[in-house]
Image (cartoon, rainbow, N blue to C red; front, side, top):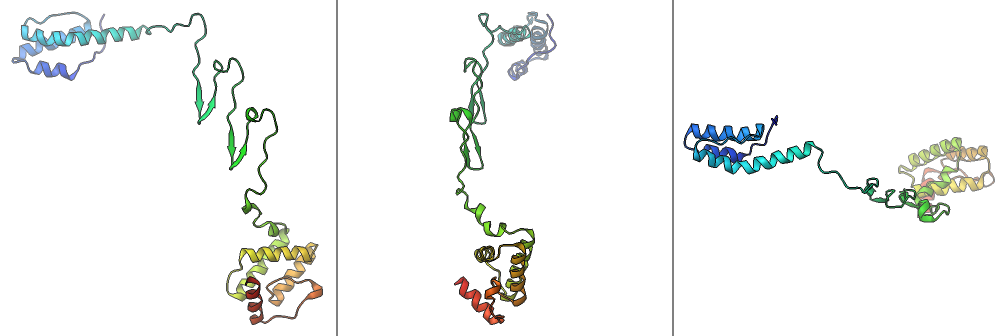
Amino acid sequence: MARESMIFYASFLKGIMLLPTDSQKLQALLSILTLGLEEEDVQPDDDIARAIYEMAKPQIEANTRKATSGSKGGRPTKTNGCEEEKPMVIENENHRLSENETNGCEEEKPMVIENENHRLSENETNGYEEEKPNKNENKNKNENKNENELNARVRARFKDFVETCEHLNNKPMSLARQQMIASRLLSVADTEEEQIKLLDDAIKNGWNNVYPARAKPKKDTKADVLRILDAAEG
């Protein structure tokens, strides 16, 4: 049966090129190609050319058998009447069992790790509720708690207050001090209007803190402002 192609190795060419005459080279080449493409054993007339052909012949015949076997689909898998076994599936380093391995049970769900808070899957917790993350785990979430409790209008005025203090003192206000002042503001004024009023008074008078109306101090000079801020931060 004629074939469309064959494997021609470099060793075949090297052996053919070592032949002394062009006639010997041509006989060896044509015999090799005829065997590989037409599957016909045509022996060269020249003895030396035949030697090259005989060395190449076993490899050509082996390649032909492999190609013929592959075109027929190869040897079928023995299943003894059962369905083909499905392979185990490993995904993302989480062990998931196939149906054959679990004997018909549902596929095991992988463990889920989210945002450094350990959340257990249903299989791992045996049906109990999902573990809740520790509220105190991330302290940074509560860093601006006091300031965030202020509503939008008060936060905007509080920002103006901080900028005014920084301008008067010629240096930025630390986050810790902002939190302390926001906490004080919430403790001395209950309503939004009262909080804005205290912030307006502090901005107007150049204060570095907020004071309730009943205990409003005299207006501080710039030197007094610096002294109060240094004392508070110290």
